[in-house]
Amino acid sequence: MKKLKFISTISLTFLSALAMMINAQSISTRDFVQTITEFVPCANGGAGEVVEGDVGIHIVVHFNKAGDVTKFHAQPQGGTLVGQTTGTRFQATGVTQDNSASPNGAMTYSFVNRFHFVGRGGIQFGQYDNYHITVNANGDITALVDKSSIFCK
Image 1: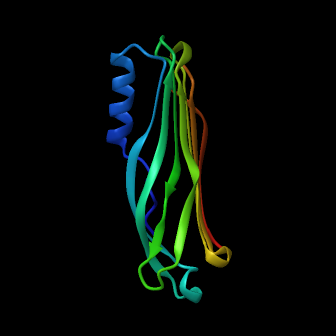
Image 2: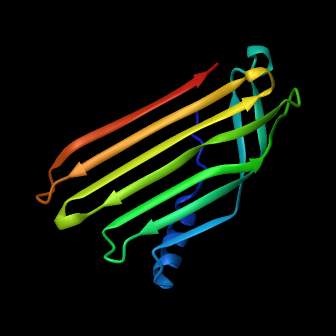
């Protein structure tokens, strides 16, 4: 099953570059709208259906002026996904965030993506992704976590 991506790498790169160009420590916007199309296997009485719609995304990018810490946070705000078979309406909730730091030649990076589609009658579909890596100043990987799960309630 394909993974949802609420925000593209291009958007993250653009926002980070924009924040650096204006010498700011953070930039925030609610103007980004993502069209989401996803198959929800527990909808339509368990037969599943494709849901689609436009969802507003609130985005915050933060970095320190030294450039060794960056934080990215995106969450859906507003918008409705509609089942293409039944017309069931779903709300998207959740968060996507990543943090990176590179002090003294070492590097850590963490990424969390957690989202749910909630529909009439409590239909829920969710995905949870967690990735973390730590590399010491010698370039050795000292920690690595890569977990992903999908659930249907």
